[in-house]
Amino acid sequence: MGWDKVMPSRPVVAVAGATGAVGVEMLKVLEQRDFPADRVIALASARSAGKRVPFRGGELVVEEMTPASFSGVDIALFSAGAGVSKAFRDAVTGAGAVMIDNSSAFRQEADVPLVVPEVNAEAARRHNGVIANPNCSTIILLMAIKPLLQFGPIRRIVVSTYQAASGAGARAMQELLDQTREALLGSPLTQQVFPHPIAFNLFCHNSRVEADGYNEEERKMLYESRKILHDDGLRVTATCVRVPVLRSHSESINVEFENERPRLEEVIKAYRESPGLLLVDDREANHFPMPIEANGRDEVLVGRIREDVSNERALDLFASGDQILKGAALNGYQIAQEWIRLTEGSAAASTSS
Ligand code: NAP
Image (tube, rainbow, N blue to C red; front, side, top):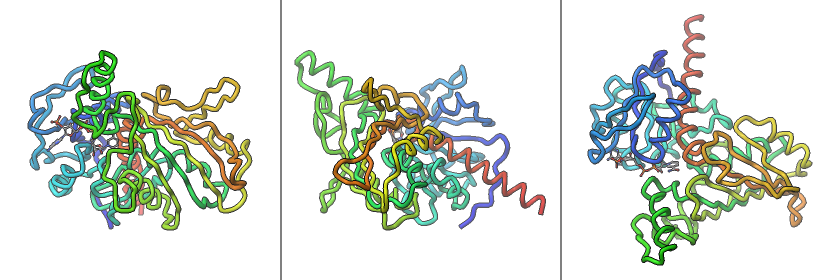
């Protein structure tokens, strides 16, 4: 596996899916962090061609994405769904661009690294033109798990998610707003995106339920965690639930260690010192991670850290993270940065050798 492209100091960046929930956030991330892009191109379907999206005090005109869109592009940040990523992969890599993909299309392919920079940044070094962004619930889970790995091997993780409507895209977020208004007015609910009412309700995550009873989101949390942590034997059982929250996913996490569990003070210290995490754990004020406080933040909030009274090797905790940011746009951006940093290192090494 190897990709010998050396990134120019001012790359041309394409944002594929620029009108969607993740794409809009991706443009904001590029803008706020002042990414040294030579040019940023906003791509979407023919439906959005000609629309304008705000960028760096001005506007970008959205272009219809075609295979020719990637000529001259160095980095293509994809969030347009798995089918679209599959359809455009060859056009992107054929044009010599690196595809950083937010969809589930390639995550389990052996030559596609699956990267959460705070967890396995090194994996971004070797790829064949595609680097995948993990599933948003998996990113939030592993951000909370990573600092615990220093205390010894983990035997099993039991996780339940409380997933925001926006995880299913911009139209799903609008559906929650519309249904809430309709429910309060006593009107019939308009239901176009989710299979069940989302206002004042919650339900099993809206992905396909497999023969074993797990839905696809739950399986992603298991298989993607194994790949990222390089631990094929890791045991994860997940229950993924969609809740009437607009933005930011939350997770209740039970972690069982192979051996003795760490002391709470050690865990709290580890969380305080971990990049990308914010400890929110005030028992007196009953103040713990909440989606409303995770919104718009880069960090994943962790707290409610306590010893599991039913298992002397286990800890309980709770996490909330902005799944459009750290779960998608920000993580994708960090992957691009990481890859540039890693290849700059190799370019410098090969020049000096
Ligand atoms: P979304 O709000 O529905 O946006 C989808 C985007 O894809 C829109 O810009 C849409 O453009 C574009 N698109 C659709 N079909 C296209 C085509 N044939 N050619 C070019 N562009 C096309 O969805 P999203 O929530 O942003 O999710 C996008 C991807 O990111 C999905 O794979 C999703 O699983 C993943 N993801 C989402 C989240 C999240 O929290 N939402 C988190 C992690 C990963 P039009 O406006 O022209 O239709």
